[in-house]
Length: 320
Length: 320
Image (cartoon, rainbow over all chains, first blue to last red; front, top):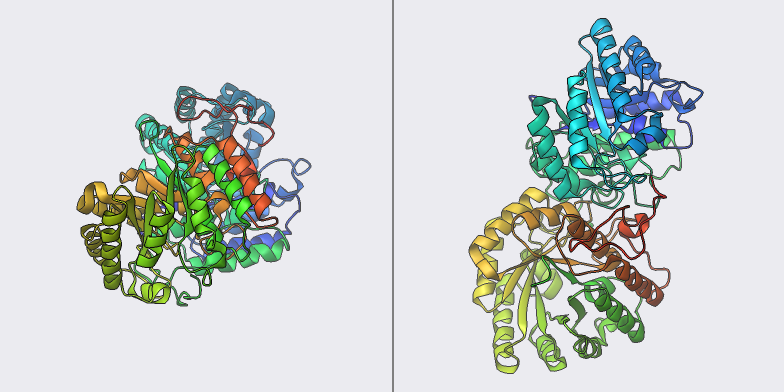
């Protein structure tokens, strides 16, 4: 983190592709991951370690992780919903595991058939396994439905905090908050992340915001102002339950990086090279709708990266 | 402003329609304006007072203003690019005039064939006319390209401030800042509005943000945090030079109001009634693409307005 101010964690290969009906071929995934890395992304959520019969599009998880481990400076992250997934991810050499835990009991039962308390136990088992097999591997929790749940409605903030503390106590190195259903607003984001940081200190983790109702970047800004320096995003806004054209689920990596770089916050990512990664994604999933406003509008005239660099190709003045 | 915390100024009938190729029939415009008023909007930019041969779609400006003046509690606003337009708008009974002045000399010359300094003189003439004919009429300036210009590139912040002060001195009651080209970022918005408020005090005006590169709501949030309490927006993101599907120019009124209400800031607007106004707009311009994420996603389950009211129809739980 010496040369960057904000870490953008690209979740497209896992979160994005998991929410796409079609399966992306392994060589195309590898090309996309290489292009993301070449653009400067330093953390990528590569795959979910679940039985291939449940999620066929994640059957190549181990191969993707192994490959990503060869890319210099990259944190190869894998989602593991349970102990068995963690075993497989550790065997594949993942540098970081992320465990999804729902703050909403209704969502937790619907999603993993376990209560939040049972997931704390699962996390404790995963942490024990990690200590035994690969103590250098980082263990992250993404606390989903932390800002509201489409099944249960509002989720009490005190419950979110209690659960976050229990997960940190059970062995999570970082606990982040996810707006799984696009219900968060900036005031709530600021309040909840401020409380999370007060409670967990260095263990307070990433903001995972959705753009379902258009507030994705505003919520990231609010989290940034509350001190958060790690953000999930998905190239082209892929995944995250989109249900209308333009209404992506995940925040688009392109737009989020543009916002931070324009604000003077170094992400380490080159937006022009990121455009090449977008082409690699599109090549692997022809016709799949991709979102993001920056790719459509292009960089503004006179744009300067936070580190003072100017784009290689001068931005056009064609747009009004 | 006693019962609201944030004023949303709907600019669709002027800014939106001016950027649509087709002409909306006058009865359809009236029905839309009535629906916007019924939804609770208390300031509407109705039309531009320019020669009908230049902008045929604004030929009914006087009729729209006269009608809007019959709607209780509504501030009937008109754009006037020059003294002649101001004469016509005052004759029609407009409660508030808004004069567009470009901070970028290149944009100013291209747009109105006058330099910014010449526009200060024009504003002084308009202010004199207002004092003589209708001293109760408010006079606002929207300072366009305040955050950058697609013709000239960066616009020095000191120049923006000097121009804003000159305009206030020349008689503007309010001077707001417009991100005409979608080049603003939240750090810049916060900095510039903070300086504007320090320089102009009560005369610091509205934020007019575009969503060209996806930062529209984040920029509105930054302006709000700098103390701004008046925001322009356009229903369905109509207008403001969109150049890609989903890439609206103007911030969508629906999304902006949702953000503020969710944050606990009262706008006075009912989002369900605003949906009826959207239908009126769509009826008047069949097939015209409308943007906005909230209309696609719907209100979140358990949504509560800032004043404590719940939506009449409970929000669905269909979306994940």
